[in-house]
Amino acid sequence: MARAGREAAYRELIRRYERPIFALLFRMVRDRELAEDLAQETFIKALNAIESYRPEFKFSSWIFKIANNAAIDHLRRRELDTLSLDGSPHAATPEAMQATALQIGARQESPLDAVEAKELGGAIEAAIGRLRPEYRSCILLRHVEGRAYEEIAEILDLPLGTVKTYIHRARNELRQTLAHLREE
Amino acid sequence: MSPVSGPHLTPEDLDAWLAGALAPAAQEHLAGCPTCLERADTEAEIVSLVAALPLMSPAAGFADRIMTRIAVARPLQVRTIDLIRQRVFASRRSLAFAASLLVLVAGSMAGSIVWTLGHQETLTALGAWLTAQAGQAAWLGVRGVASNVIEQPWFAGFKELAASPGRLGIATALALVAYLSGVLALRRLLALPTPRVAHASA
Image (cartoon, rainbow over all chains, first blue to last red; front, top):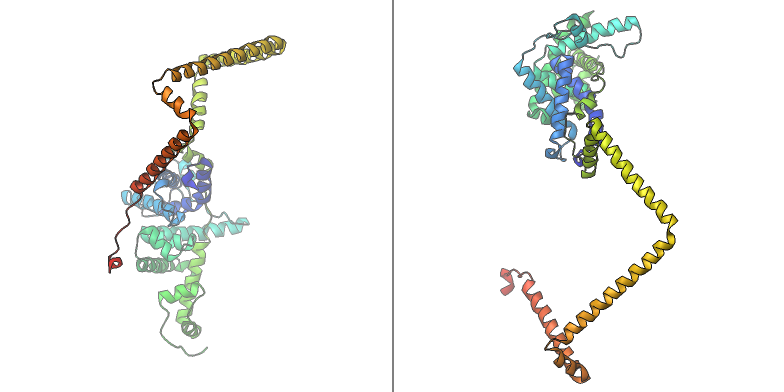
């Protein structure tokens, strides 16, 4: 479809993948503006190189691979260790911090639910944010995006066994980090 | 609770359990093992918490921002129209020039149509004159070619041949044979060589 080089087809591809790609990048780099820049970079790279896309592979795997590489490259350049629920660690002003803050609780129903959802969601986001980037990619692709182990291995260029190990370790770390929530 | 059977669940078993595809033996163990049961419940809880993370979208106009930065291959006609549009709207002067040109062309066409409708007889006469001139020019051309052929040295021999139907038939047959021989020879020359098969000669 996109090979035809038509603008409408490109827009359809963006519409279909903008949310999962943005969500993955957001949770990888933990900065709204940065995630958007990386998502743009991902789509621009993918669409400009659409001629090199090989249809025997899934388009979603290809674009997730580009996005993940963009995130990993960024994280290697700038090591961000902690998740700031109040906004980007690079935000200079309170407005910028507000603008880059995590938007949690999109599915809430009441103010009480909202507070609970924000606390719980924030704790999970924080726990995911503390994982190693490789574990983070694996756990997000597996349990947020619902990708198969084989597809994750393809996206991350890792052996299947390594992917499984990373996901188990990530779940173990999350279990330990979130233990206090379960006890409450 | 039934007594514990078999080894504790491996991470792969837990994955299978999460996917609802745990082997019967492991399922039996899970039913009787509080340690594995608690671990499996915790895993399921973690997975459901991660899967329930809120949906996220980039800011509005995300697609537009990307589209302005990628090279979309456009057909020549579209590019030409875009180029003309850019040139026309580049300045007030170019816009005024384009408008004047449009008025001129449209005015000429309109004038032409009005004149045509008012001078149909003149146009009919003009058409008839042009047809006559074209016919005369064509006839002169045919006569010129015929005169040229008649003056050729081989024309006398051809005329004698045409006067005798027998000779003409023989000449035509010979020409046909020569043509067919030529076609057959050409086909042989253009045919792909057949590869020699080793066992065919045995």
